[in-house]
Image (cartoon, rainbow, N blue to C red; front, top):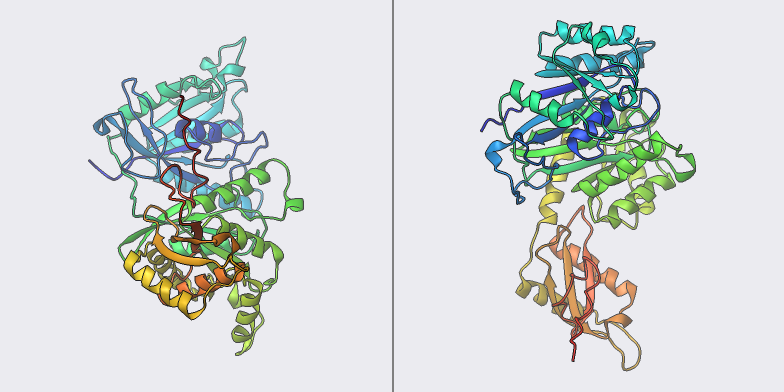
Amino acid sequence: MSKKLPIVAIVGRANVGKSSLFNAILERREAIVADEPGTTRDSIMAKASFYPEGKKRTPHRRVANTEATEEPDNRYDFWLVDTAGIKDAEDEFEFTIQEQILQAADSADIIWVVVEADVPITEEDRRVAKMALKSGKPVFLVVNKMDKARGHDPWEDFQRLGIKPVIGTSVPQRHGIDELLERLVQAIPQATLEEDDDRLRVALLGRPNVGKSYLFNTLAQKQQAIVADRAGTTRDVNRTVVKYNGREIELMDTAGIRRSGKIEVGIEKFSVIRSLAAIEQADVCFLLMDANELNVQLDQKIAGMIKEAGKGLVLVVSKWDAAEKNAFTRDEIAPQIADNYQFVPWAPLIFTSSITGQNVTKLFDIALNIDEQRKKRIKTVELNRWLKQVTDKHPPAGLKNRAPKLNYMVQEDDNPIPAFKVFGSHTPFLHWSYKRYMERALRETYGYEGTPVQLWFIEKHITHKSGASPTRGEPKPPRKIKK
């Protein structure tokens, strides 16, 4: 089956329901939806799937080989692109947005022009229709918000735009969605694209205006995210996939995370939530810090969130070209940063500049190395040999008649985080400093640079044969037997 998927671009003036339609087809909330016009700024792309002939549409899945009841040969995959609302470009920033809309329409195989059923045709609607028809691509007219068009028939007005077919939709009721997709698959070649389970996912995180989108563009080698000298430009999680040393890497550019008191209600709050969700989706996170504003408590808080999520972490000092420095500055700053991030001493530190390209490519190498470290597995025999050496060198202290003794150690096989169970006696009396000593010794022997490591100390009589692993939650209580 062909792996070149058709591209469908959704265009229209602001606030006609493009993002709502985008989310309805994906069956998940990917694009931000709000009553405020101009919510979407970046062009957001996601893979969508449709099973014609009345078969149930399957939501997007991250892992490819997930069981499905539908025949894969009947599936149509395509890229769906949500764009900003078309309007007059009043400044350079707005002009950049409008340029992206034109680029999305130019690269699309199908264009959906969205209008509102309850609003008469506007001059902007005519401009959008003219632009779409001028492209020479197949164009559909989607008359959205049909549930609001009570008491009058809008079809005669919208037919004057000269676009066929015309399909009415109402997203809240999912009216017309299946008809729209049925007409789409009649106009595009059938193609499927399985998700690559080996793909490495990297999220770019940080406060607003620290250079995430500049770095995203430099890494992707194309102008996909909007870059501007103002905070809060990126609102959605913008994604692109690049290949490096034969490996697919999915980059996720996120909205800036502000401290709680600075987060505005509404759109910006959704953006922050989307950024936090990106941490969960990622394997490795790049935490960007402005070279001119390094000692910021919020940066440390974000690093703590990444650590708690069990993700790989790279501390990235951005805008290094713009920092006031001398030959000794880096050697002076690095220890200061290390001191501020003592809780993640395993996170590599790198100084970058997206303008000059300094150390940008090294980020790929670091991310791939961290992924390799996270997948490292140690044989149980070797682990227990190491455990004996560590405990013999520095036995754990405890209370009288309550001295902890560590007997056995094993690594979990099904955990994406390097996680180890250490079985012994009197483990609740193990001091936190000894646990830190063991983790430090483990890293000195086996590496694990750039990733958290979990050590779980378990009383040897607890087998965890029933219920979840201690790294995945509490075990289920034993089943009661009726007498």
